[in-house]
Amino acid sequence: MSFSLADKHIVVNYHYIEPENSRLSGAHPCFISDFSHQLDFLAHHYRLVSVGEVFEAARENDPERFCAITFDDGLRGQYNYAVPLLKRVKAQGTFFIITSVLQGRLPSAHRVHVLLSHFSVAELIRLFHVFLKDFYPDLASQYRIDIKKRLTQRRLHEDIATANFKETLIVLPEDIKAQFLRYCFKKFNLDADEINRDIFIGEKEIRILKKDGLEIGSHTHNHYALDAISPSTFTGDIKLSAATLLNLTNQSPSVFSYPHGRLQEAVKPVLTEVGFKYAVTIERRGLKTDDDKFLIPRYDAADIKVFLS
Image (cartoon, rainbow, N blue to C red):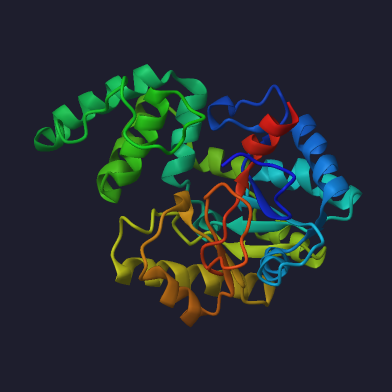
């Protein structure tokens, strides 16, 4: 669904906020100038509040316009560039943290972003097929990546090859995916520890965000797609993330963001058990009065950019 001002209650999501000369071109960053322009537009037309306030306003069919600004992953560009702009317009913001990065881990999705920023998708797909042939020949045909026909209707803003590369890696077993990405990093001499420090904020910045009145939410511990792992695995992952954020901020997180926008129905009872009040998806539309509190839709930054172009 395309964004329209007919949507009175919305959530908008951002990932990388970067300058135009960013080394992370493969992550499709929202440039600082674009974010500033979008934020001014949203602040003019909406009251910028928390996710919970938008949800409750939609449920009550409040005639006032409400918008929540969210940021997935806890990225350094969000802290360096977006936060000052949020403060300028006195806006609330919610930052969804991947807690394993605080221990130095570089999640698979971000390894992919780095690789796509430095190498062509054609080269990476070729390397992936070589990897499967050498190490998992019995899986080579099952996971062969088509560069002409889309696997899903997700990632329509990306070319077919890039979208299919990402979608294939998401459904690949976690151990094989991790092995392939380590294989790529070693082949291209990339330092995962250094990249982690460069991309993500740390405990100090998270405490500052909390102190400044911005909301800290959970994006799980390991950033696994929750429809691709067992209930016991995602239960432990969600609980560990919530406990880590409680220890760090002295407050249990109340808002959750599904990694890759993926979930299975069994996740929602776990969110209730852990104490989450709301959870956001990547379904791109405005809120309705009867939306599930654990399936809150969000527009992407690209939707606002298209509307303003």
